[in-house]
Image (cartoon, rainbow, N blue to C red; front, side, top):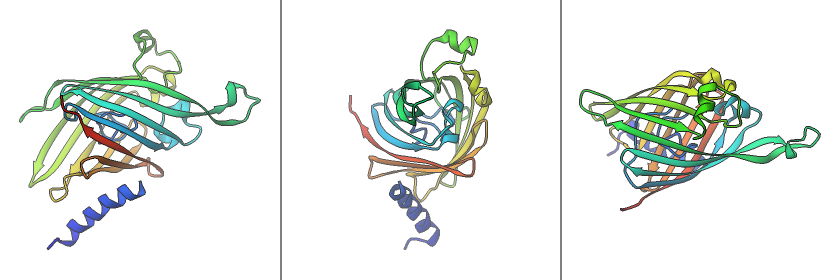
Length: 247
């Protein structure tokens, strides 16, 4: 028979899929807002949509909660690429005299590379860039419309504790826009997969501004759901479909 605490975790996973690996709003693997050095298996294709709380977004977009969608692919074991889009809440045609609404969208490409895989005594390492664009803007720190643009390096180490997988994740990010300088610097968090329900992952992280907590779960091999409590008060979450391509 299933013990009460095991049943509770299973019901939690099912609840998450009904109310709705993260960084699904970017289409890449990671924690919630913070990147990690984890990578999906080669050939994993992801398509999904998310509700995004304004505090989860770059500072230039923190006017209103919004929505986004993503397409992602782990091209090789060491390379992930994705295409992301987020709706922009703004004046129609950029004219301050016009009404506010979701009249535009921000589209960007993300790339992540893992040069070092995790070993018994060392962590995995990853380098990546969200909102791939001109490097001179990264260097100068100019304020552009590349809202999500940042370069990062991340490290991840997992430890098995009686079947429970504990992950420690640390990253350093540099956002190109001075408007996002509050998120430049060190970020990181912890993840936990329970021994009795490995598809479920529980997470906590410091994103450079505040603390996020959440969980994600993969059910029936394809349906992936994630839910996040942003800075203790805002909800972000969504659904995606995962499919393993064979090549």
